[in-house]
Length: 352
Image (cartoon, rainbow, N blue to C red):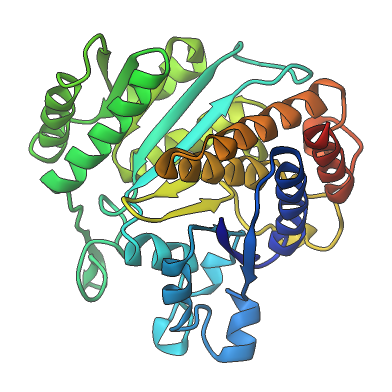
């Protein structure tokens, strides 16, 4: 498997190094071979090349079987004319990575404040309320007068159809329960279309149970009883908020894996930011990027019909859970291990 690795900013290089050590352990255990290219993005690239994402990097990523993007300082990058490109947005948009798959589950050894659960949020990734994703050129947020701002939300039939089918297919492989989260009572046309398309898509998956919940009510339901949910599908902004909530309910946002997938490419990406305030202190939780990398292996294995990659992904998931259950965890999870030591423990369990 050819991997492009982009460590990013802040804690990115630390958690990326740990993730690669876990992948190396998985390769040894499951007989995998990785061909790895590593490149700068974010501030390191801006200082060296005058841009956060080099023009040739996209083609190198296209030639790979998948890539890993560490957290980047996206809030710092405001002017693309000065080379300040948001790497996450750039790759999602350029490679049409329309499905953001965000699992959240509880772990033995960690307190579960709202009870045990195991669910996945499937979020549309390329349109919606995101102003940098809706127009061919420029943003869709406009300052009409000094005191009036208009923000446009784009919803298209194509994007609704493909995220609906991605979520239905995933639910069909799990517990056959799909929840569609929307706001069609207010956004009658846009969310109305999204809802109708999800209903129609579900008819192609026999035995799939479907329920529909308004996004504001969903926040209450997921806090009250997250165990009732299996696969949740929704539009971009709603999914962004909901997936952070469900990850935090599992014990920490640092436990939220995140895969950005399209038809031909996929990017593993930690669910959290670059946390510059703790960079270089060996205290960051690398679990999110480790779990995201495991999702990438599973995606690649399923796509290429290579079961060893799927087995390796599940082995990484199990090893991380076993480490936490044994009390080997970083400080945000109530443990006393540093970033590197936690990764080393997970790698040791992976090797067996």
